[in-house]
Each structure stands twice: as C-alpha cells, then as structure tokens.
Image 1 (cartoon, rainbow, N blue to C red):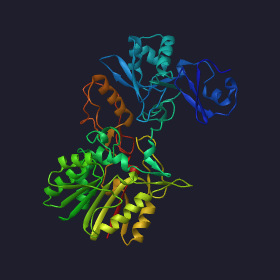
Image 2: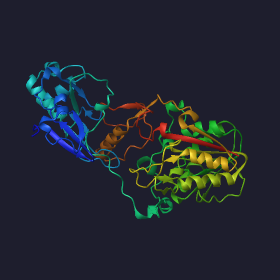
Image 3: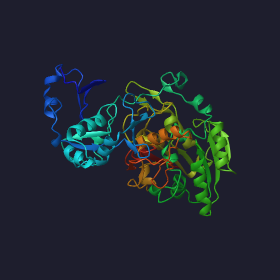
Image 4: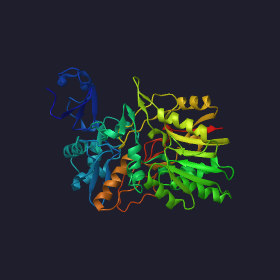
Length: 459
C-alpha cells in the first residue's frame, strides 16, 4: 500500500507517481510492480520516507506568475491540457504563504526559508507542500540545487496535450484536403494571431533577432536584386508582402506584385496592407499563370497545408511535390522561388495535432529531388541561416503567452496577439512577476526557427 501522500497518475503506458509533499515525480512502467509501498526506485528517491526539512531546498517552478496587487499566483491547471495549451487559474496566498514564497530562491533550505519568512519550520514544510502539491505545482522541493532552467522546473505534471478536433471534410480518401477550409476563412484579422501563428507572423514586427527589421524586410534583402515580376502564393495577412515592398521601395526598387490566395477574406486584408498590388483567387496546385512568367515566387509557410497522403509508413507530401511542379512551370529563365515551411531534411512527415486543421511537416529531400528532376537548381537552407536570424535573441516563453491571454480574458479585452514579444514590446497592463523570456531556440509564440527551412529553387 503506497503512502497517502503519493498521487498515482496513469498517462498512457506510463504511471507517474507524484509526491504531494515535495512536488517531485517519477515515471514508472504502467505494468510494473504492483506494490508501490516497497518499490525500490521510489525508496531510492525518498518518496516513501519521512521528510527531513534540512535536506530539502525549495525552488520556484517556471510556470507560475506572481500577481503582487492580488497576493496571488497564476498557475496552470494540471487536470487537463487543451490543444491551445494549459488553462490558468489564480491561487490566493495567505500572508505567511506569501512570506515563504518571497523567501524561496533556489538556494536556501526549508529551515533557512522558514527563518527568513518568520514561520516555524514545521509550518513552513506544510505550507510549501501545499504550493508543491499536484493541483498547484508552484514550488518544487529538491534535495539539491539546480540551475534556474532545469527541466524539472519547467514541467507541469499532467496529461498529454489533447489533439484538436477535425472535421470530416478535411480528409478525403486518406489525404488531407483543406480547400474548403481555406475558402471559408472569415477571421482574417485574428486567424494568425490566435489559431495559426507562423514564424513570419510572429516576426512581422521589428525584432532584435532581425536587427530591428521585420521578417518581410529581411526576406526582401535576401531575395530581391532588381525590379522584377513577383508573385506571392498564400500571402496570409499581407504583412510579409507589405514589409517586403516597403523595403524594396526604400532600396529604390519597384517590383510588380501579384497575390494568389484561396481565401477571399485574406485577399481583402492583403489588399488593405498592400494598396496598388493585384490579387486573384487561385489554387497553389493550379496557378493561373502562363508558363515562364514569374521572376520571383514567394510561398511562405503554406506547403504543409497542401494535400498530404497517408501511406503504410506515414505521410507523403504529394501536394508540396505537385506545387514544385507548378513552380517549375511558371518560373522564368533566371527566376527564383522561395518556399519555407516546418519540417526536416530527411525525417518522415508528421501531422500536427493541435491546430484546428491538419498540417503535415515537410520532408524536404523529396522536394529537392523533384525540383532537380524538373531541371531546377535547388538549395535547402535552415531559415535562421538564410535570414541571419539571431537565435540568441529573446521572445516570450510560449506557456506565458497563454498566461497573458488569461489575464486579457479576466480584464475583458482582446487576447494578446501571437507575436515574438520582448520585454520592451509586450503590451501588459497588469504587473505580473515571473514572465520568462527564452531564446529563439526555445518555445515562443511562433514555431521554432530550428524546425523551419527555406527551399530556394532557380530556373
């Protein structure tokens, strides 16, 4: 019989044993020994023995935010993990609990924290245990010091993130099919802020990672050398194209610019951002363009939306391969195409499960082979390398974007957009202590740059 302070959490093939006194957890095989009260791994970890406060160091976990004007913590709710990320709730702190929270620094032991807070050691151990317990998980009591970004401090012990619901029309005969989905988009102004943030959208505002430039401006500097015929396929909100053209004009260039998109709502928004450009409703797999008439084609983070087919071994990026054929057809002599997307060079494609529609990562080596078979030159480059993106620059940690949006909801205002916020740019009326700023190598409001690639095709 396990002690009453152990919470047993069966998740899939794993049994997580959570120590309610300290917030520590250990994963065991779900079909392992039944007698947890004498389990050797738990015994070695100290989960079965009485606690010695002098041997425990309390650490603040990374998710909770402190709301000083309320004397409360904002913490994830570990009971459920929705597709959009953890839900958040406030945990009120009594005055003595607040004193203990303020004294926790990841270096002092429980008796030292208790002395600093003016609380008896036995009471401190109980109150810190309440903050460490599974429903709260604001504190972790460990027998050692750990670095501030240690994985144990960044973990919420709870169920896996839930997949998003899918509608039947998004699949046909084992393949993803999103034509109807894109045709029906009517939330153009908020879609990329709230439901489908791309890397380009996150970096559409000036950012230190781009030396103060916008994504579209840096893309212009990398791709545009003269006033040529440009076509953008799937231009989203139009921010990328607007920044691209602003930079072009600043360099004395006046390219023509045609926008092709399946969504009339997105085309209308693009027209607002890029007055003087032309836009047509069209399909990436059947571009309404004559052969050999495009000098520069942009397809930024759209090819994962094109149809992919489920095979016996996984997925095949059939739509992306077909699109490469269309690119080869419309590129003029000397023309260039820029295709970016998340994926890898050689890994099997995988379907994302948390978006509100199916996207399948790209296996780029197959696109390279297809392009070369069609007589194009093909070069695959990590997007960070192509754009000289400073991956040591910072943006807001992804879970804390969810926390900020919870504060937005409480205040009755629109949710904070999915942007690569920095401490200098985040619009945050409430004072919340503990926001975490991570490098672009870590999870932020947009996709990881390290998983995004640029495929450059030339005629």
